[in-house]
Length: 218
Image (tube, rainbow, N blue to C red; front, side, top):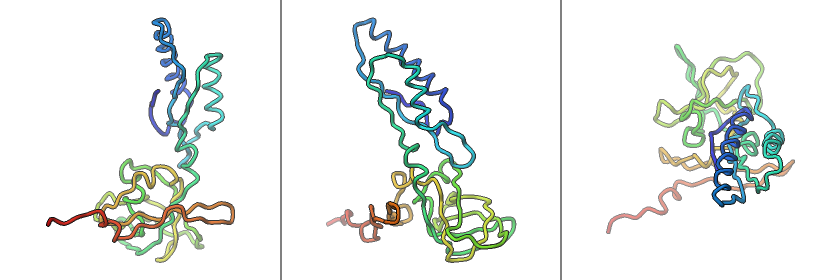
């Protein structure tokens, strides 16, 4: 089994890792140890901004070509590549703060809901659900948590008003699994959209649920 990284946008690192695994397999085979399967892990990236990752089918084809007739069961773990661009996070603009040198759009989502921008300075596309006409202004999109790192995007050109809904794209991976209840914030609901049908697949947490497992001293 191997894991060589995450958000990889070229096939070459996967082929290099496979070459090393095959060399190790050959050594083990010479010692009488026969490997039945190879787990080549995950790490295949997606497009957040201007990346050009290979398609999952091209990734698999390159690996199979390198494997040739080797009799292994091959396992892959393409998590982000499957769900990353299938999910968005919808948040509402609560307040606009204009000043020098920055303007801030304070939204009701925060770093506890989607940690990647705060943790990695990761870039996520942020677009209005219903665009307004006009050039707009440049905003940092920030949450209400008492942390200077609480942002979802910086220097975004948007025409905004309080109450507008924003869609944070490519939020299908590393969203809920990295979310927390920091600042006593219940985690958001999750909704599955299937064509014209919407299904609640994870209900919104309540404040009461945050304290349900706590006990006071006798």
